[in-house]
Length: 133
Image (cartoon, rainbow, N blue to C red; front, top):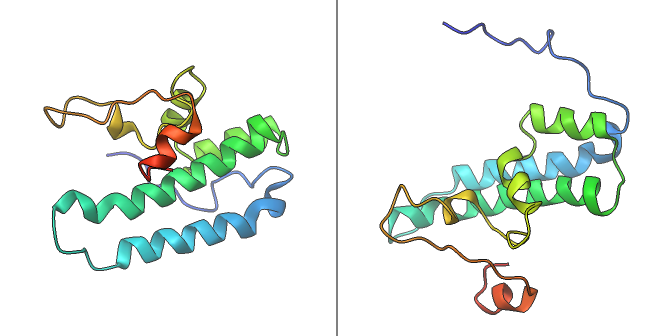
């Protein structure tokens, strides 16, 4: 059985975390609201869309802070990924050419369904026209 993690054993956040802590709390509250919301009538997979959207926004926020704006340090970025504030696999896909606007990893996985939402759009109008972004 794996060891239980206690908050006292975690390393404290690196310098600069207090600057973005309020924004991360807002994302955490949005996630709680999305998880506690009753599922809409219709297909079961639609119930998870809002959860995926909030996770995407939080990961994109951290990605933009580190890669686009260069507002956070490498140590803080690594700490955020390690502690689950952002999806490291999704960010790894965003760094690849053609996947910059990927909404979730389920879009490129072919295991779960016979079809997929595999898209590689380099222009932003292509995705916003369909309401993806």
